[in-house]
Amino acid sequence: MIDVRELTHHYGSHCALRAVSLEVSAGTILGILGPNGSGKTTLFRILSTLYPVQQGSVTLGGISLTDDPAAIRHKIGVTFQAPSLDPRLTVEENLRYQGYLYGLSGRPLRERIEEIMSRLKLTDRLRDRVQSLSGGMQRRVEIAKGLLHDPQILILDEPSTGLDPGARIDLWIYLQRLRDESGMTILVTTHLMEEAERCDRLVILDRGEVAATGSPEELRSSLGGDCLTIITENPDSLREKIETDFQLPFQKIGDNLRLEAPRGHELLRNLVEAYPDEIQSVSLGKPTLEDVFIARTGHQFWGAESAS
Image (cartoon, rainbow, N blue to C red; front, side, top):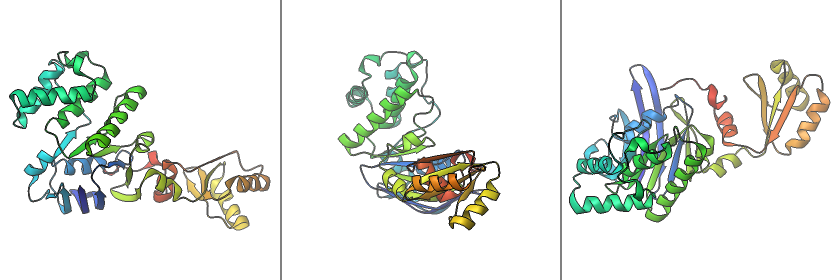
């Protein structure tokens, strides 16, 4: 349903995306995970036809973005990170004006609005002004706008921005129901690990490049063991000793030392016994998506440099 090949995008001399490739099957929720500045927004703007393709190719629903962006706009629904509703109008008025932009009117538009509002459990709020709705409800109305013309693909940029935890959970329950009931393909950009865990597949972006792809479970399993993190006052000195004594290639991440290893609890015990005065604290756990990011990029998720 979505096919991106060797996509590269520059802002002047700055490369925001470098040879990005990804494929999304129909009926899949794909998450584009990356810290601020990883290139997520640039990719979102290209897929939603706001930016042209500079280099590479993008096909959505079998149509080349370069050849016919207007046709693609009828196949995609887009929900932007920034609010796009008029707060002084009612929910129905916002949706009706959105429908007019896609050539919908009269009875077909009314029936479509009623159908989507029923799905989103907002039927009783149709005549309420948007400014009277909670943040979670407003977000659902934003998504409803993107669904009015019955697109094949729904593209959402940081959809849970500004939502409280309960509203965020409700939003993801609805997105998963939308995938299951209609077979819609959904692409979500996010910097939230717990949100990424809810996706069928992930593409991890870092500084404009694809660092890893796969399902959340596949990515976690790829590390092949426990994740051990050591906090010490002299990480360089301790890393050198460990590599000499244990032949283990610890990574230095910030001021910490980090390693993925099978039977990590045994290694933890041996290290604490060997360097009791140099290890301030140590943590051990099963790999997380943040561990995957660190392993693939060599730096912490929130330590990434800006890449636009």
